[in-house]
Each structure stands twice: as structure tokens, then as C-alpha cells.
Length: 435
Image 1 (cartoon, rainbow, N blue to C red):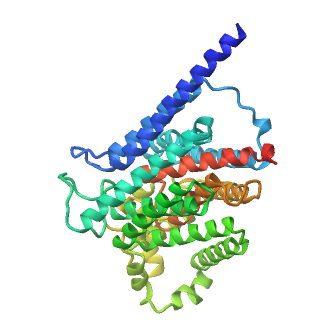
Image 2: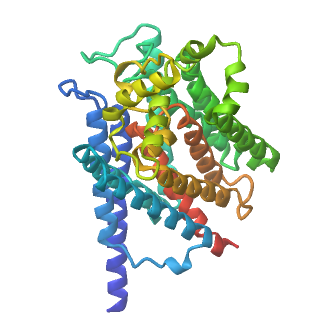
Image 3: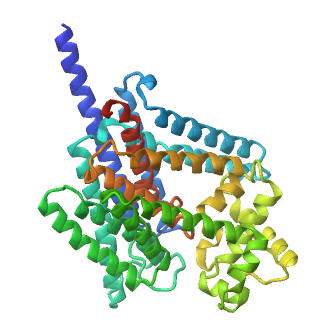
């Protein structure tokens, strides 16, 4: 009788995991390919709906046969990560409670809670072994098709769709709607391909990865996306450091980011560093950053006004113009907002989180990311372990992309990054057993 029960349970678990796997795979492909010509947001609306439905269905399937959570078996690092993420979520709930725009904050919080389910989905056993490898190829298929469509548009072949792009400088947004989004996805693909090529993966997989990597780099170059190129270079540095155990590269990269951020945020340091660069003053920096400064100063002013709680998730668009104008009056400078529909984002995930949920939420999440990356960088795995290198590549790319873009606001890149974070957490949680 016990054997029969065990067999039935194994069958149910296998069925649930297959349903969850296909839900996530279709959500990934839908977030790259779906377009609704009749919707106001023809690109983002169907993609976001597809991701939310996929996350919900996969969660229901996995909960159907879920076992009790054995948190005592988690490694210490993974417990810290879970606690920090929970504290950040608590800050976001508080921000919604005290938000001056509850009609925006609460729906945004509900959407966040739904899409955040991708983290525990990625942390589940659904992606163990062969299913995880197949999911990676689904990601690469979505990225590669996006790159090919963008390159075809670059040579004059247009999509047979009567919809407008979401801003952008070039008509090469593929089915994502913006060439910047294409470059974000291609940077992730190129980093993943570099990780596979540098790993102990089979020879055929490494050759295929190298070819896809060239395709991704070509798409980034054609679309003139410096941020994605910088994110890719940073990810490559981390991959090289981990694969060939050159820790000084990671130290150098982190130190560079900290120095750049500190000198940019602290006014006295900014006056003797960034302000001295021969780029033509504020106007020159606005052109150099493709007019992101307006969004950044608005976010900083929002943080200054409500540093502990922010204005609530999803409220940046409602508050940005008021705070940008206030910053213009304070600084006696004219700031231009980002073009197209992207003016509703701060073009900097960290600043937008602080503006909408408060500085504590940002600090909790940043600390969780640092602990997660440190856990992956530990030497519990061989230097050429493919999964470890791929996860480091994806997360490193996302960390840098978030400095000047909003990869967590783009359905496809958000899905990839959240799944990768969940899978990375699972690896960190199991380090006690590996040790």
C-alpha cells in the first residue's frame, strides 16, 4: 500500500512539474513574441499578461504536490537571503499602505507579488537536471529569434504589424517593441553563451553557444546600445574571474562601480569628478545618457522627500514631473525627460525602487543580491561548472543593466532574471550538503 502511494505521489509530482515547466516555457516565449495590435500597449500588455498567467499556473501546479518546507536544511547564506527579501517585501507593503497614490500602489504591489512567484518557481526542483537545460535553450531560442528579427529590420525588412514602437531611436525593436529591450535580451544571451563556451559543457553545446554569442553581439552593435555592451563586458569579466579563479577582476569591477556611484551621488565629489569631464556640462551629459538625467534627478528628489517609505510601487510616473521640475528650480538647470513611453520609468532600477519603496527596501534587496552572488562565488563547485557560470552570467548582466535601464520592468528580461535568481538561491541553499 505504501509502495502504491509512493508511486502515485511520484506520478503526481512528475505531472505537476511538467505542467509548471510548460507554463514557464510558454511564458518565456510569449514574453518575447506576443503582440496585440488592438491593445493600447501593443507590445507590453500581452507579454505581461502571459508572464503573470504563466507564473500563476506554474505556482498552482507546484503547490499541488508540494512537500513541507524544510528550512532547517538550508545553508546560512540562503536563510539570510530569504529573510532580507522578506524584509524588502514588507517595506513595499508599508509603502503601499502610506502611499499618496493608493490607486496605483496596490495594483502594482499585486502584480509584483504575482511575478515574484518566478523566484520560488526557479528555486523549485522543477529545473533540476535536464529540464533546467531545456529551459535554458528556450531562453536562448527567444533571445536568438529577437536578435534575428532586429537585424532583419536593420536591413529594411519590416514587421507585417500595424503597431508603433515603444520609443527608441531605431525601428529595430523586433517583437519587444524597442531596440533597447532587444539589446538587454541580447546582452543576457551573449553572457550565457560565453559562460557555456567557457564551461565543461559538451563540445557541440559550446560551438552552438559561440555562434549565438556572435549573433547577440552583432545585434547589440547594430542597435548602438552602450549600456548593454557595458553589462556584457562586466559579465564577461566575472565569468573569466570565476572560471580561471582571477578574483582580482571581480574586486576591480566592484570597486569601480562603488567609486562611480559614490562620486555621482555625493554632490561635493560630483563637482570635482563628473562635472570636470569635457562633455559640455549638464546638456552634454544629457545627450551622453540619452536624456536619462531628468528621470534620475526626479527619482533622487522623490527619495529625498520620502526616504523611508517612498511613494508606493508604480507611482514614479505620477510623481516624476513634479519632482523633476522641483529639481530644476533647485539646481537652476533644465532637464529633459526620456523620450517615448519610457518616461514612466526612472531608467535606473535601484533609484526607482528607493523612490517608490524607500531606502530600506533598496538596502535589503542589495544586501540579498550581494549575499547571493557571494554564495555563488564560493568554491563548492568546480570552476567550469556550467550551471554556476550561466547563473553568474545572467545575474551579473542584470545587475549592470539595471544601472541605466529597467530590465525588471520588461516582461521577458524580468522573467529570465527572476528565474535565475531563484535557481541561484537553490544552489546556495544546497551548499551545506555539497560541503
